[in-house]
Every structure is written in structure tokens, then in C-alpha cells.
Length: 314
Image (tube, rainbow, N blue to C red):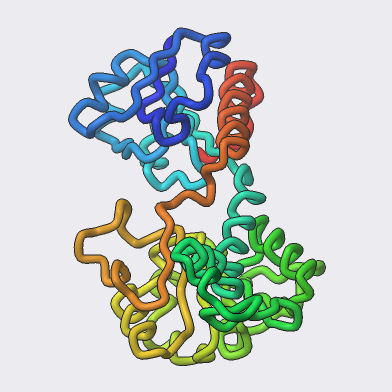
């Protein structure tokens, strides 16, 4: 049996090992695979793993020996599932592996806005504290989280974890979700969530209904003092509308780990936007999180080989 990992660098740039997969079969690992080489590199592989490689019907037709596709992510829209079903190809994903790390990243963003640690460290490094006549100073308003309202849009595993952390800070939590749960905080409409929240954190799936849900109209409902946090999907945002809202002070700030186009487009409206913090899709990337992803991927393949497939999406 042959296993091919098409874009291993995305998950493991060298700080982890793929060695365990060789317990199951012959393994070939490519750091990256350009689209024109996908068919050739799959070849007669029985199983492949991928993160961002698109697997189309044409590719599947050219690789008749393929029986298993392991997506090294939670989202699996890169794979043509209908074409896989027609061919009896099993497709698995990696659910709920990054809950803790993404929730942690949400609060890294929130605390950036409330505590301005980087700004004040830069000031100290610049010598400002040495020159200060007082024992302390601050260059931006500081704020407590206790008593502030956090609005969570989407209450899956990550939304729930964010809620738990927020409550530990003493925040009030409200939620908007399409499937309310008995154990969730106060449920409100999307409009009420925007109006009432001091911080809005996005955690819903990207669907036709949620695509571009953050636009000029919805941004106008938010408090001018409110912050928007997005660690979920760049497609929620009409980036031009958001950049204008930031520039005009319609909201206080935006922090994102995701963009509609990744890597960032050369003309991304948010590149120089006021009070905008962007990280390059790293909320899922702590080494512990990626090691967990690898372990689940291994378990998925082994379970399939044992005739007891898990985490099957097709």
C-alpha cells in the first residue's frame, strides 16, 4: 500500500515527524505540490493526505487506484465529495482538534485591544520610561474585561470554549446560533448581538447565509467602542466595507486570523486599515495542536484500514 502526503509543509514544516505513518504503509511526503504535479504525484497511491490541495473529478479520473483521501483540516471543501462517492473513495477530516488554540488566539486579540502590551513594550524599549518623571504612564486607554459583553456568533466547540474563558474573566456572554443549545448563554438575534456587544467574536460556519454577513449595514449596528474578532472564516467579511468602517471610526477595531483570499491579496483593503490587527492564519498552528491533528489523521487511516472508518465526510 502507498500513502502520499501532498502538502505536508502546511501541517509539519519540520518540527514534527511523519514516521508513524510508515507503520501502516510506504509513505512519500511532499512539502508542497503545485496543481500541475498533483496527478503525477498521486500516481498509483492507495491513500493521500492533503491540506489545501484541490482534488477534482478530473484528478480522481486520472488516479483510479485511489481509495482514501485524508483532509488534514476540519474543512473539506477542497475535495469533490460527489465525485468521491461515485468512485467509492472514503474521505475523512480532522474535527475539533484546534478548539483550545483558536480560543486562546481570540483572547490574544482581545487582550491586545484592552492592554496594549506590545505598544507599551515598544515605548519602554524606546526609552520613554527612563525619561518619565512618574512611576508609571500609559499611551492608550486600558480596560478591564470584567463586566464587558462578549457576543459570540456561532456556538460550536470553539464558540463554547471562548464563552468559558470569557466567563472566567467576568464577562457577560450572549450568543447567536442557528441551533440553540440548553447549556449555552443568553441567545439573541444577530442584530441584537451586534448592538449589545463590546466584543463580537465570529465562530459560525461559512454558508451562503453567512457569507459577507459583516457588511456596511451590519457594521452600522455595532457600538463605536466595539471590537470585532474573526478567527473563523474570511468570507464573513466585506473587506472594503470593514476598512471604511475602521477608517471612519464606526467601530473601534478589528482583529483577524483569516482573510477572504489567502495568502493576502496585494490589494486587500485591510492591509493598511486603521486599528486592524491581522495574523497569517496561525490560530491552529501551535505545535501541540498540529501534533494532535497528525495523531487524528493517523487514527483515521488506521481505522479505515481496520474496516471501522471514523470522521468520514464522504
